[in-house]
Image 1 (cartoon, each protein chain N blue to C red):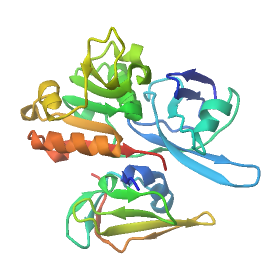
Image 2 (image 1 turned 120 degrees about the vertical axis):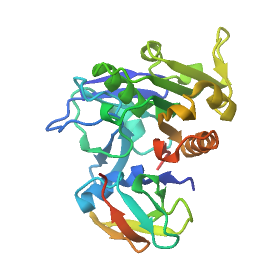
Image 3 (image 1 turned 90 degrees about the vertical axis):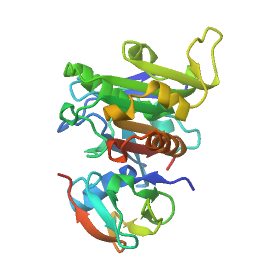
Length: 225
Length: 84
């Protein structure tokens, strides 16, 4: 581990100097395995937050209070410590420029992590493919990468609580929200949705109802395991 | 229990098959629907990780890891098409 950066009260980005790392594609994840002194092992998957072009491999970890792995990664791990990684993993929820667009990224909470890798990759290769991020978070304090996302075509909605000065959107991303903010179905956008299971399924269903081709929609669900 | 999807077991599948299968399509033995492995409905808790067909809900396959050996029972998969 090279560096840790607190993104929000509950999420931390961890930069790693991965030994023998073969390189990754934007959108992939990595499995982290911890082994206790008595041999007990726990393993979890984390999305890669960095672009393939970035200097370090970065994962952004959300701390679950009753978790086995995330409290260690976010609170105990310090620079210089070593982690056992398996990866990169995944060939489905990935984007490279040859896949085209226009690109619609839809994030629920920490689901923004692999989509940030896609945005960073898109920028690193100076892609001219239009890309837009729809990002739903509970409160302003839950927004990850906020400063970085400001420079992109990003539409943020805060569902539960908004800061007093908030002039952005509120409420969940639903059919009406998508009809207004997503690329129209006729433009055949390539869609990546990442978030908790209920979020992903609601958005995917709403997009299909709006006429989007299901084969152009890629999904990744996460949750405590 | 909240289901995830095939992305969540991609690492275990690589360990068994040696290649990434999330972008491969598999056909359900029960209803004949073909879908990406990544789109399977996957339950992570319990003695094994269980993957079900997103179209009909029937069992596709089960992964069980005991003493670091992962066994895969593909009884609900009749066709497997690698990604192109």
